[in-house]
Image 1: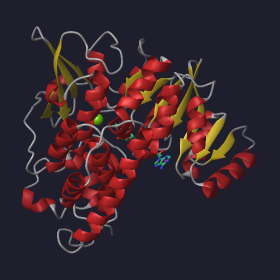
Image 2: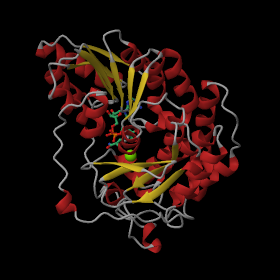
Image 3: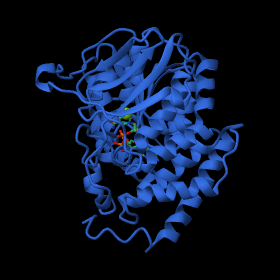
Image 4: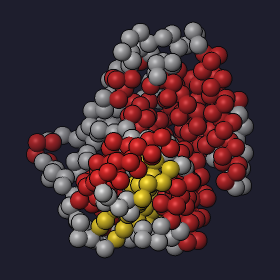
Length: 404
Ligand code: NAD
Ligand code: MG
């Protein structure tokens, strides 16, 4: 029986993880479930999975959850605050930690899982983008197992066959071909992009995901973050990764070896495949995902990404090449700009303008410690807030009715 801590259990990846766990109750059990403030959803999850611990960041929501748990006669202990996330990641009863918090908020508990030698299932790509060096070092030092959950990186991990040491380039690898769906605006003309709404940006054609990653998929920043993620996970350089748009989202990525062999991993776009793969690895377990109907699929296509309509991808490539804290600045500016877009304070096309402004204003530095990372994150957030204020009324005319 393996105990699992899910960081971000109420989110899209978290819910899919519990779905897979529920199919294998004889082998897997939830030890700790954590969320930001959704006590109603976390209560239902506690009732079904009876974890030992439940964590909410928001103390008011935690108090509500504690009371409901008491009334229901459950044994789950409710903790609150960000420090409790790290405790949940380090629990002795926890074998596997699913890191599925969105954004920089997931960094410290993800590091805690890596430092305590757990099997770390990494969905929270922002943690790796910010602190790849520190995270990979921690994994190596503690003997933790790092298995990517991002469908592309999980595909690459599968195509690489023998588990390589985290962060070291596999023998014989020539390059990685990272696929991108292209998002909901793949065929939207440039002049219409400034007026797209958060609802349109979040209506992804193939995947149902949280709002932040949905916007990242629409700007192609998601693929840029995934480029940086791939460099850390597989020890490759940005120029070893080719990004191709593949709108059907069934080829989750490919690897090419020096002998010319290209291996791909295919499957329906359903996160339960990478989640079940990583939970059961090196074995295989049922995930609930439908078989891929290749005849109905009939045609799969690949095309080059359009960096003019989707400048966020180029900005991420630039940060990947610059290294140091550049990816931290990129990620922080993106989080602030995406939040502003979701709250209708910024146009879709201004997201890239804000990020570029921050990259131009704040110098990248070598990453010496976690403090360097956290300082760069804070500086970039301040610079992004200022950039948004400066843009007000210039690039970002209000998106009329977008948030209605
Ligand atoms: P989501 O928004 O649906 O869920 C986020 C979870 O994190 C929720 O449980 C929420 O309560 C928690 N959370 C949010 N802010 C927090 C904070 N400040 N402190 C603690 N917890 C907090 O997001 P998601 O779509 O499930 O994505 C989670 C991560 O997985 C992201 O990094 C995303 O890039 C990555 N990912 C998601 C998918 C997908 O299909 N959804 C695919 C690949 C990678
Ligand atoms: Mg992905």
